[in-house]
Amino acid sequence: MMLIFPGMVKAGGIGGDDSGTPGYWYAGETPSSIDPSKSPLVFVHGYNNSSAVWHEGNDMYEVALANGYETAFIDLHHDRDMWTNGAILAEKLQEMYHHFGGKKLVVIGYSKGGVDIQTALVHYNAHPYVSNVISLSSPHHGTQLADLAHSSAAWWLAALLGNNNEATESLQTGNMQYFRSLTDSHPNTAKNRYYTLGGTKWGSFGSAFYWGGLYLSQYGKSDGVVTAVNSRLPGASIVQEGGWNHTTIREGSRTFPVFRPYTSITQPAANYSIEDSESSVGKPRIHSIVKGGTSVNAISEQFLVEDKVKSITISFISDKNLSSLKLISPDGREYKMGKAHKEKSEFFKGAWVHQIEADNPKDGTWVLKAPANASYLYTVALDSPLNDSIQGKSLNSQETFHSKWILYEFDSSGKKLQQKAKGEKPGIMTDGDFSQEGVYNVTTEIKGFTGNGKPYERTLIESFYIDTNGKRYN
Image (cartoon, rainbow, N blue to C red; front, side, top):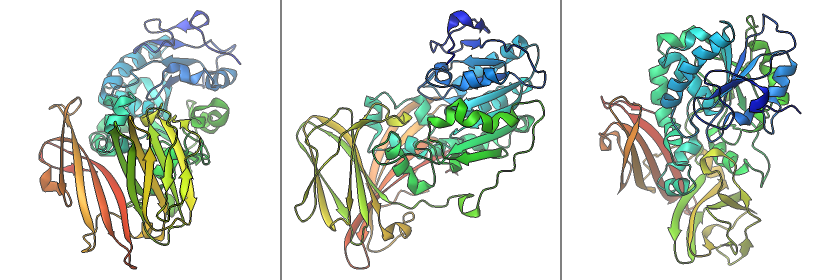
């Protein structure tokens, strides 16, 4: 396999390498013959990685070169928002355009890179240098994993792992809906053609993206990090949504043949169709309990399981690999957690995940016990007929609610995070509770009773943006 090293590439822009320094870009080898119908390809990485993601452990560069394409790779900030990265990328796209002799570029963005690209083209006026944009599982509408990472149950764990930052805060679904309102109607949006690919595979029990995919399954099909619905861009053509996870969707041998027709000066129209059942998702099927904390003493947590539940999957996530995790059912049966694995999805990357599944669980109060001195988050996914009826906060006299919220505040430009505020109250938070501009992350704990009088509980995590006029985006 051919890899790129700084010594064997033609330097572009400011002569960068693949060390991850924001603003550096570099060109790949020149193909043996250059086809004028093929646009130069510019590859933009995502959150928490660098340009090396395209050629270290990945054959994307090799496949592109073998197919006769000129290539370039750029490093942006791995932990900054789309506004910071978009400004840098816009300047460098102009340099690349001139480097390749004024040939319009096709820009390929992986994950958050797709959002950074559109920001550069639309809001920083880089659209003249680009013909097409191809995004690979980009969270154009954000991702609910970012909402989870910044919720009251998990923000401190994400921060401990180094994943609570400007980039992940910006990818909350509420903030991205506000971004969509600024972008979709902008006159520059129509000046480039956009094509999207989305993944629908998140692996089997214990695999790297299983936990993320399990959590996201209440929102629709996903690749373990981004739902297929959220990877779709208004006004873009969907090239394909298929069996890729959030890693394999960026691999050349897997997806280059799929998006290759849209990398030339002329290309066919994408005609991928989506079944009506997949075209949108309404309110999620609320199937999870989410709790977290930190403890210097031994942990003893409780959660409720209602009757008629087919199975439960408990994921215990910590900053360290813990031993002696135990799950105790209401009838005293003891379950031991399986072997831990390191989480790979961006928002809790580096965390240790223990998982266990119990079929036909006993209804009642379950107890989770863990060693002392742990910071943790745990989720309980319930396969239950009740999931279809719990869709949002319906004011049922037999249900009680407790809400906690965090405000991620922006400056007057709407582009830079400044500070956070927190609060909580019994009951349901209403729009009247939110007066400041910014992104709100609200966690609502729901408790109630089934038709048979059995207690149940669920957790609903929402994100939305309140603008200067008090308008809500979610």
